[in-house]
Structures are given as C-alpha cells and as structure tokens.
Image (cartoon, rainbow, N blue to C red; front, top):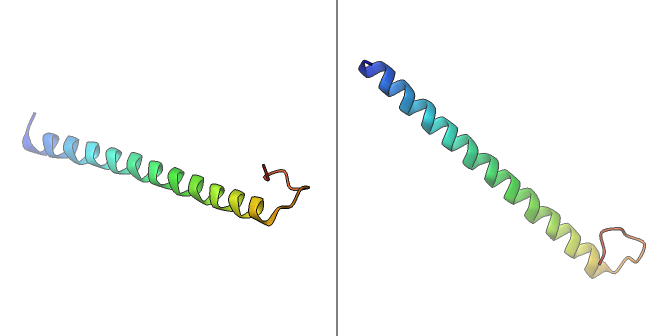
Length: 53
C-alpha cells in the first residue's frame, strides 16, 4: 500500500462517519419537531385529533 491508498481510505472512512452523524442529527431533529407538533396539538385540546393524548 502506498500513501495515496492510505489517505484515500482515511478520507472515505471520515466521510462515512460524517454522513452517519448527519443522518442521526436529521432523525433527532425530525423527532423533536414531531414531539413539538404533538405537544402543541395536545395543548390546543382537539379531541378529534389522532395525535392528542
């Protein structure tokens, strides 16, 4: 293995880690948005709403 192969492997690994972290962040943000909407609808107290507890 020469230096280029090693550098390429490191770059690919770093990109995979970054992509996984971004996907995790996006999923956490959408979950938080969902909870905000759910709580807002519960506070509004719409009994016909399927999201209200």
